[in-house]
Image (cartoon, rainbow, N blue to C red):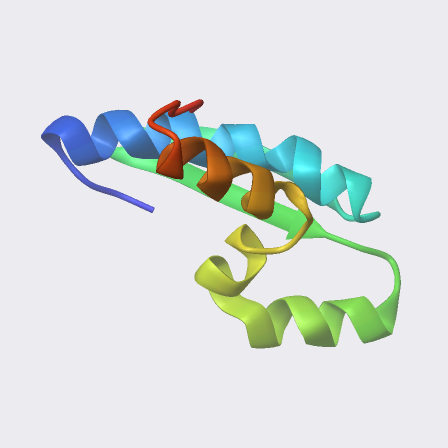
Length: 82
């Protein structure tokens, strides 16, 4: 994921923060800093999960896990936590 300005700042906060959630799902996730963004690397040894990860793509992977409900409730209440 790449960007500039405020978008780049958000990418550098958001993408690495999601690696913990992905690890809780049983995937190995890490990030690599890029000059204009962050590279997300997600792996698994389960062939069925590899198919799933390939089908999800970046955005599909980013919405996995159960933290989004709490996150959106906090945003609705005006308490942003990223």
